[in-house]
Amino acid sequence: MTFHFMFDLSGKKGIVTAASSGIGAAVARVMSKSGVELLISSSNSGRVEKTAGSISKETGNSVSWEKCDMKKPEDVENLAEHAVSRLGKLDFLVINYGDPRLADFLDLEEKDWNESIQMFIGATVSLVRKLVPHMNSNGGRIVFITSMTTRQAYEGFSLSGPLRAAVVNLGKILSLELGPRGLTVNSISQGYFLTERLKGVLERNAKKNGTSPETELEAIKKEVPVRRIGEPEEIGYLVAFLCSDEASYINGANVPIDGGITTYPY
Image (cartoon, rainbow, N blue to C red; front, top):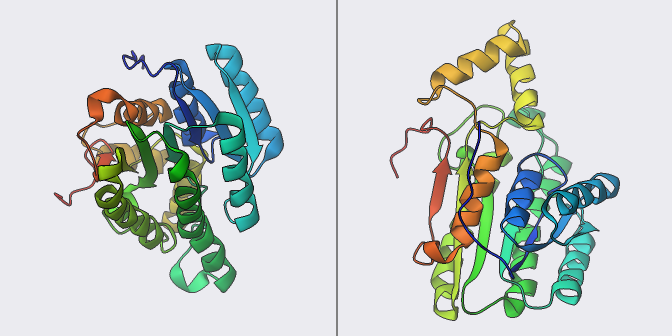
């Protein structure tokens, strides 16, 4: 599928977390193509360095990188400090997250909860607190990338659903408090996209149902009203739109991008 980009964000500066692969890397690539000077992060230093170099070579724009395991408070604090020293005044803060463990509630351990709470809540709170004072007060944008588990319950997503929903609620509160300061805060609830996370879901479903990942993929496609799985770049284009001047009146929204699969109407 071919996409055509139309938002010019040249001269802007921003951060995209958890961006060495998958959704985060796709968002970073689209933002860089649109002219944004980026700092991207990941818990895997080798992979994020490679991704930053690849995107920069492809787009011709500066993409620096920083190792940051969002489950570690010290890494998050270090990322915020380096963002300010490297970029100065920030325009965009796009917080993407790693994937928490996919398991039934009773199979989760206390460590799983502690790490996931830090990644979703602790890291988000820390980055917003430390970086908002350095953000553009005339068009600054904060975007949280969550998932359809914030809108609809799914077995095995005990970590993802409640914690991402908390991020969405925090975004709404921040939109009220930061709106008068010239910043907008929105979140995105994504559906099924072609990522490693989806492969894990397909394998889990196949094992549970005694089928194959291919069979499970076709079953999911049939559930999605547009009859296909999303491509990561499509999230990138939505993020770029929310960061554009054209979206300056969108604030406090939780935007679904899921092909229509979630049925809750609000």
